Image (tube, rainbow, N blue to C red; front, top):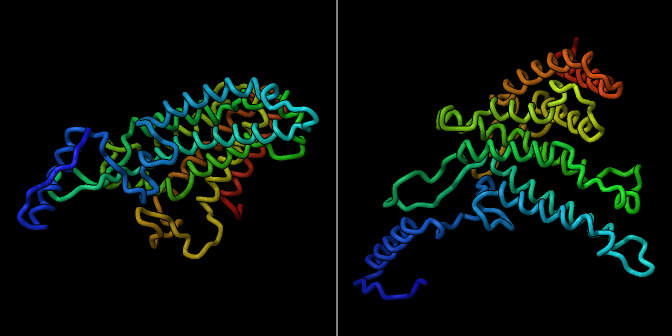
Length: 317
């Protein structure tokens, strides 16, 4: 346990020097004393509700708890004369917590560590989130979210609280997380880190895009029927890439960087080139998979997506 003690310095200047050395020595001896800036929105180590050192492991534990809760929601929310308002509220809260876990994880992708240092300390202030951690984050999202989380789609709950004409909460979480993952700002951070720190030392933009595509479009190789949630997610994936390739008109098409807005035109970043290559490759893979998928709705979906990509790549064609 730490204690307060006098520095016995002869003046404020010497006191600052002594105290600074105490801080440096303490941090070197115990990394748990590290404290984030609370102002860098890209450092995954500084997050609300985050008390661990691995967002993926912590979120997996959280999901295990949610799976234990959801099977009892009908029972635990039941009250006399209640018209399922309690059930609707608690189901929404449960899905909301699931969404927070996804937000904790996605922040690792394109993450930038910021470790405040004085000039007496060694090492850099800024460094990219380690490649292995970013890969783990994408793998987590592919498994826990982008594969349809059927455990959240309990008909014993949904048929009591959700009109089927309404947007499903799970689909909203999938789309919102995917749009965040594939945002121009995040892709630009991946590209910028690769340029500064070297391809061998970073999670390369193209590699990240390949990993996400393999997860979201796995049916192209397995030829399994594509369920409704996956069809919506795949369309959202294509829309996200098309919006990067052909961004909607906004003032300056600003991309956000370390300290806020910078004067980077979204049409001129490397991500646009990578996205175009991804769409070209995806179109070829989709066209090759259409005939092999036995499900009629899946065929219609793939034909539709292929046509959307074609128009995006060649609007005048």
